[in-house]
Image (cartoon, rainbow, N blue to C red):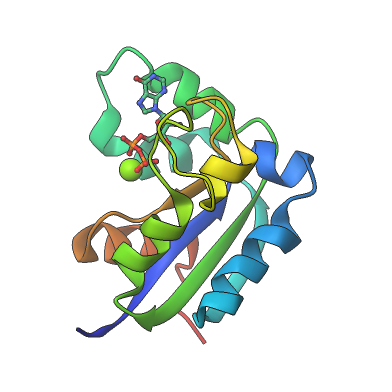
Length: 138
Ligand code: IDP
Ligand code: MG
C-alpha cells in the first residue's frame, strides 16, 4: 500500500458528451484527491508520445487521430494505491467486457471510444504525468 499519483484523461468522446463532471465525481467520491487538472487539445506529437507503447500496432493511427480529435481533460489523481484503484473504477479496456458500475461499463460501448485513460503502472504514471503536466504538480 502506498500513496500514488496517476494520470487520468477524459478522452474527446467523454468531453464531447459532457461526462467530465460525472467522471470527476466518481474519483472524488471514492476518496481520491485532484492534484491538477488541465483542459487541452492534444497535439499529434504528444499523442504519439503518450501512446508510444502502441506504436506499430494496427490501431495506432486511429488512436492518435481520436485522442487529437477534440478537447481532453487531463487530471492528476492521488490516493492510496491510486494507479490500480483508478483503473478498477474505469473498468476493462473493452466496454463489452467492462462490469456495470464501472465508468466504461456504465458510459461506453465502443473500444475505440471508451471515455477514459488511466496510467497502468508507476513507471507509466511518472512518464505520463510529466507529459501532461511538464511544470510539475502543485
Ligand atoms: P487501456 O486504455 O485500458 O490502458 P490499452 O491497451 O493501453 O488500454 O489501449 C489504449 C487504448 O487503445 C484503449 O483504451 C482503446 O481505446 C484502444 N485500443 C486498445 N486495443 C484496441 C484494438 O484492438 N483496436 C482498437 N482500439 C484499441
Ligand atoms: Mg493503456
